[in-house]
Image (tube, rainbow, N blue to C red; front, side, top):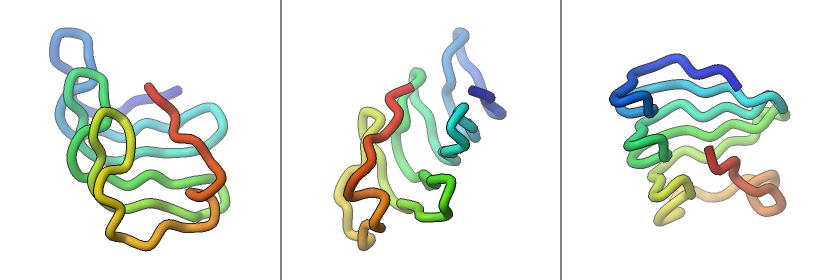
Length: 77
């Protein structure tokens, strides 16, 4: 995993981009090492979720989920 962004007390906190070993990406807001607030989660095939996150997971999924979202789990860190 590679993280590019803001840190506070050795935790991801603020705006940042993380690229996981499987090439999934999260670009958005972090609070105390958790995906929190607005962000975009992208799978290697290009499918993505753009919207709100709470406690590392999509919240209030008003945007239409993609095929990958229906079958994939979100990386928790």
